[in-house]
Length: 390
Image 1 (spheres, one colour):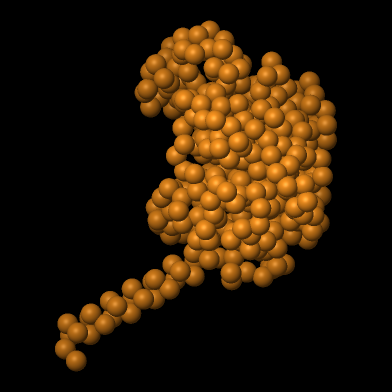
Image 2 (cartoon, rainbow, N blue to C red):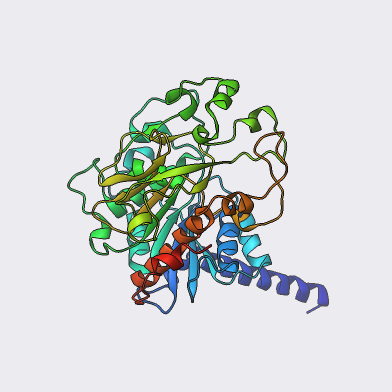
């Protein structure tokens, strides 16, 4: 055998081995058994931003779960760049993160019933210890039986079919009152929905959405009119539309009204009189609440639902804001909200409005504790004073 032939065979073997490795990585849940040694967190839409957010939470000790494995769930027909995500994981040696691709067919017509993806959802509840639904683009209104507003932008229908169907399987919904939710078998299973994730929790359980806050809630069809409302009524930053500069944040900070029955008050140590500031970037919001959901935080004017919980499953929490954003922990001044503002950091904005920084961190301490409890570890929740400490 000559050297060129030997080299060709070696390359072919390497490609085969690499391909098999990627194939195995793509179906991580298949290699897992219920009750394994690691705490397993399943996250939908494992794109680079979301992986960076989790990595920052872990690096900064904010999501502190020893022996944590994260499995990124996505459908092969989604538009996300998961090749880039896999490269990011490999380049940064994130051995705690792996992927699980779903290829079973799913369409708008079979989202809210047993379908070809049902075994995937069953495996998540059986083998994981909790789930996160991250932010993203608008849900197609047809999924919640509404016509599509000109303000709605549909970018990734397959992602929404998969995630809304997952919510329906986990929690049930008004779409089929006879459907038995998977969480009936694990009622303490924690589920966190962030921004789009809250909206998916709502739509998945049979709720509907406001398709544009500026026009439908505040009657402000122009940017200039939106600006006059003031920052407490901004759910993204209107100045970014007039000044599309990298230093003008597309996000906005506004404060919350916490309701006394919320996990924020009953489990995280905050009071109804606290008004923490949060990072916000969305133009849609909850309209009619889905089956089993109730509001536990609103905007200060009470017009926008900012957080929901579930009446039957105590560890389901949906947030219309972004406590996961990695820039919340960065102290370097990089952004401004208004063009005339000095550069500042997201971290400084939160630190300057107590108990905002503690509030955003406490959400992750709560999730860490619930993940460990779901796994079978008996980790007591932090005392109220400790939970509120910046």
